[in-house]
Image (cartoon, rainbow, N blue to C red; front, side, top):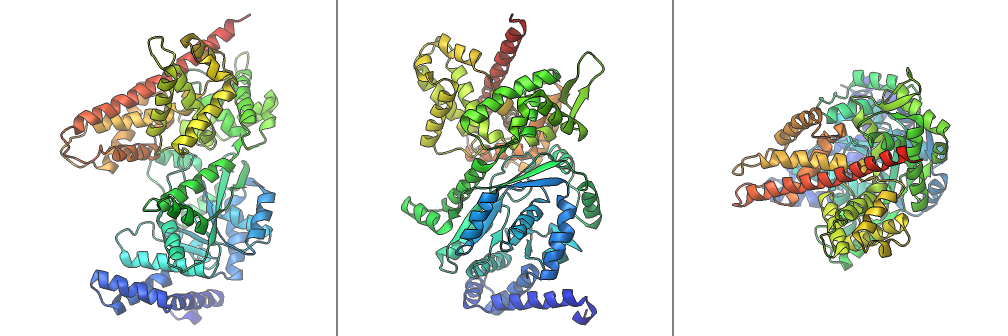
Length: 613
């Protein structure tokens, strides 16, 4: 088709994109990298350059004012109308000042298709530079892809591990953008979280940026951690269904129309917070001083995600779903939900956690408003036909409720681990109770290291000590006797281990249980094993062998498989493999029982409180 036959604006941007591709392809660096790859692949340099240029023309972007306006004022409201945006204005002002002398790389959490539109609008409204956003080419359909590619969006293939030329294209285009000191944005989780908390990071794009700086192809860039949290999300129901086994709908024009239609209904706030920026050059220098090596990129990504967690606020829906999911055997009255939430609020205040609108939960009116909001969207069901209203998680909606709870769950993990460790040290027959408690805490940390972003061991130890002081300033003196240790657990305002850890440990147990049943002389098919875990997990929920339906999650099963791989339990052939797999399943079974013991203790406490004068 001739360009003249196209819309003049589209034609002009197409010419601009081709020109950008030519400019990148003719740089000495690009030519040199193509020549090196050609030698490695035993192909001619001309052949590799020709293929690479086609790849460049596929991914390069321009920032056309007309299409930027279409992105912001056309597509933007279609995606973001459901929320009122609550952003950290002071942080935005600091970033604007930093951007005068530094190129910025925004690394946001990925919860919704709306994420990039919300951030783009914030930057636009604050007079800040537009980002070049890297995303998946699953959004490349018309008209979305047409607009995105001309508004600064870079749509790349979702998977290209075996395509060395395409790897070179993405790596060198990213290096070229960095050399131009242009702002970048991508989602290191690699896709929308299905559980509501951070997914393990994907390192590919960050490694390309690191390579560009280390090779002198680009100067320093500041990595900006970004947390986006939602009171509620229209799309979460479908995401939760996908986690439990449903197939994912393909993104196309019909899908876009349906998505836009659902987004017209307002459902709360979207909270955007920014972590402390991280100088990539300084991070690399520190890594070199500590030994560097292949873990450098992983350490940087880990630090970014920790900074995201540190700025993520605790929200009202997170605490209310936290309370409801923690009671698996019955519905709760409004007063009971209120009473469950109060010690969580006290803990958040004592620990100095970032929060938003939590004061509203101090009264029953605020708690009821949050419950009604969740009831309206079908997450919570209420019954008012008796003497008083009672509330519970709507059957089939546990994964949706867990998504909201999990947005803040990282703040409570250390406290949950401390409770289990303390309970483990309450038995009369053990010697060295503190050593036993520390061993228990570090064992849980190791079990969940692919699920949560723990600090290094020395820092984790100090964090556990800080948690113990929140429970009781004289904690260390009180844990000398077993009776005192149990008394601490009986009198602490709230127990949370079963609310925090149980769904994850139950999911891990399913994986360990099914892994132990696999033949030891054949490679493990991770995809097939995951699907088996989904099916068996549903069975265990129906049998009440699993008490938390949200434990049936492909994403959590994947993290459990990562742990199994880390323990060398997936490769066939080792003579002791069957024994080690059984030991892994037994370890998870013990961990599940330990958390269940906390839940039973919590029931005992509630029963005692109910009959107290």
